[in-house]
Every structure is written in structure tokens, then in C-alpha cells.
Length: 201
Image (cartoon, rainbow, N blue to C red; front, side, top):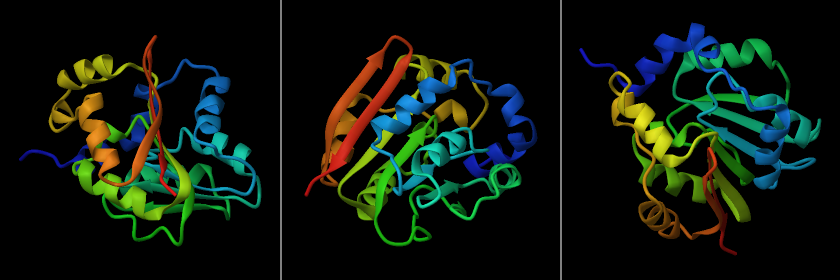
């Protein structure tokens, strides 16, 4: 029987951090957080957070008065995150990216770091992101690889990840603009992918 996306990531949760190590220095993560406009007292969603690689940098940015929603479809990934980051202002939510009903009120930013290709319903996801973002809020999709590198790597993985691809810019633009999200920054070179959009006022 073929695994669902949730089952796939749950099956790797115990060794995820061993097989997905990042060689990038902390400053590279801080740059992504800054690009998304995350600062003191802000409310941010780490969408597809996995075991929480981005959480320490988000905590550093928002401070004690900020709020972080850590959302992932795989509850075993979130269990790893919760065992490491037991903070009052980190709220874990087990849910698909297309259902952000657990996020209360409006947020300042949504970050998908190394996660957007894995969302089964990207159109519904962008709709939900736009719904929870405040006017002027930022939505960042980022990877420490180019789109071509990501898609080639995923094509060699087991099901269902072999079908998890990052859409081209034209498709992404359509997905975002249908939700009143305007692209304000795009980079797909030198081992980096960054697509930043802002919700229209």
C-alpha cells in the first residue's frame, strides 16, 4: 500500500534530523527570517515546520512577546519539535497546510522552508495563507537549493515524494495572484530559491 504524505514523514521522524542536515551557517537562516519581515512581537506561521529547524531563529526574531504557530501534517515530526522547544509562545498544530483553522486571528508572516513542494493541495494552501495573513503580511517560500535541484532530487525519492515538485514561476504567480498575493522578490539561482509575496491592502 502506498504511503500518504503524512505517513511518509511520520515514518522518517525519528531519523529526520540525521538524514536532513544543513551545512549553512546560522546567518543564512536569519536572512530568511528577516526577508519574511519577522521581528519583535510578530506573529508568524512556520508552515510545514517538520522537527523545527527554523524555530530557534524565529524565537530569536520575535522575542518573548511574539507568537509562532508550528504547523505540520505529521504528528511525529511535531512531537520531536515539542520535545525541543517547549515555549509558551510556540504553538504546535497538527494539520495539512490547506487547513489553517487552528491559527487564531491574523498573522504577520507565513514561512514555508523546504516544505511547499510537499503540500498536496497548493491552491487550497495559498488560499488559507491569504486568509490568515494581515494586509501587507508576507508569505515566503524558501529552499537552500534551486527549483531545478529540488525537483530533480525529489524525482529520485520514493513515493509520494517522487511526485512532489515546486511549480514554475508562471504557475506560482497564478496561484498567488488569485489570492491577492503580489510577488515582491524572486530568486532562483546560486543554490537558493526564494519567492516572497505580500498580501495586498
